Image (tube, rainbow, N blue to C red; front, side):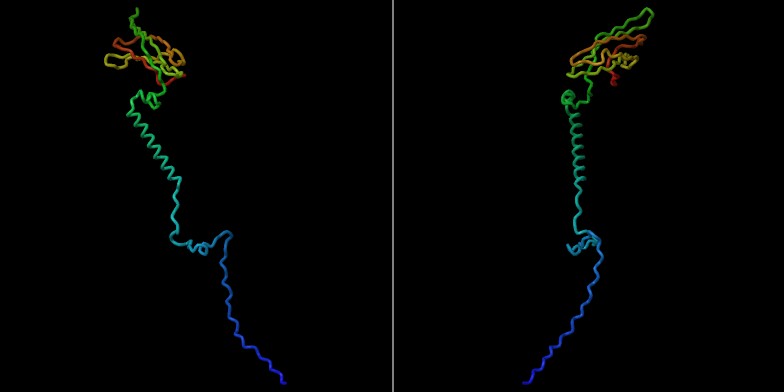
Length: 193
């Protein structure tokens, strides 16, 4: 029997030409490829998102507006509410000093030398419920047109006054002008301790 002839394999097509892979861009550690992940070009002319609002600016603006409203409300209360009511609720303009001076006696005498001696006595009263520091007392002699023609300072009779207490004082001045018609007594504003 004759031997079969070996069959040659079918001709194969040459392998396709494969191009070498393109070189990868150099990446820095931690950098993300935003374009591949989200489809957003990070270098586009306008950002693809809205700018965030700054909450600190918003709260600062609200605090300023509330402060202005409170100041306006207090000013309106000071103008519209009677003084005694404002003092009772603690917003009065009378200050913290609640002492007052009550004049008791004013006597004018001509001395043998011809000089005029003016004697003044009075009482410092604390009508409050707290201990008050007593300032010095200012005596002013006024003429007929209510101008001060002579004044002097009377030392405070006591350093402090207990609630509801009073302290008496007396003083005298020499060489008071003859044009004097009245005397006024008031507490000195600055308290010297």
